[in-house]
Amino acid sequence: MPATKVLILDDSSVMRKIVERALRQAGLDLNRVLEAGSGREALALLEGEQVDLIVSDINMPNMDGLEFLRQLQSRSLAPGVPVVMITTESGEEHVREALAAGAQGYIRKPFTPDQVRDRVLPLLALA
Amino acid sequence: MAVLSGTGAEVARFSKDLDRAADEVFSTMAGVRCLPVESEAAPERETISAVIGLAGALSGSLVLHCGQRAALRIAERLTGVAPESLDAIVRDAVGEMCNMVAGAWKGFDPNLASGCLLSTPTVVAGSSYELFSQRAPIRIERSYSFEDLTLTITIFCELPY
Image 1: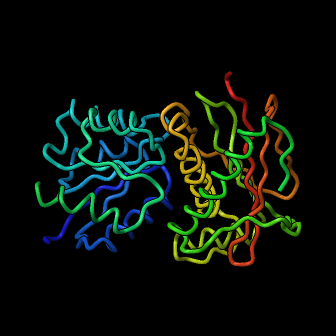
Image 2: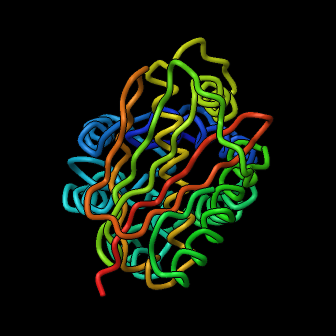
């Protein structure tokens, strides 16, 4: 598995660290980890950085994860980069909404490194 | 545990699901069991409460409340770093734990999973405060223990029907 550059988007700095740890425990060789505490910050980062993977929360103030996805697409940022949503929302409608907005994967909190591995590695293999 | 009011069926089901949610979240994210206990925590000078609003199929809030010792331990378990005071990281950690318990709890009910939305966490910390929830005909309060530390989770809610 080649080294991966990932953007982790979550308004919680604690959750960003937990996600990074889970990605490493899942077996990803993380070359560089970018963090963003808001959708706006993430979009600004992606204007100047190439990443291999985006992991995003959904429930955030101001710009939620779904709006971030829509902005990502409308501004043609990170084309072809897999986006995985990690969220407490567990309803099937929420999953459908996230996938319809452009996410390629969906992980419910709480999560184990194995669940992260099972969702993320296949997406990186396809990218 | 103190079940103050509400219809019997909902209260029993919500309580059982809350027990499952607390243990699942703590076990998965913090690596420790979190099991119901009858006794409440010994009072501490500094306490912290995280509140998640519930809206839609059910209106109300879920509150996770604990003393400083439990809060510091939660943060250490989630981050791997032992904090020394109720700082921003600890508030963030307790807020996220409350968020995940709320999400896991409502996820056990298909109607709530799709029809009940969660707010972002609000966290209050200090030495002298009380939280009130107006118009909450259902109140479920449960005490839990993890690593000999105690916390309380309370659901205040009103069903739309």
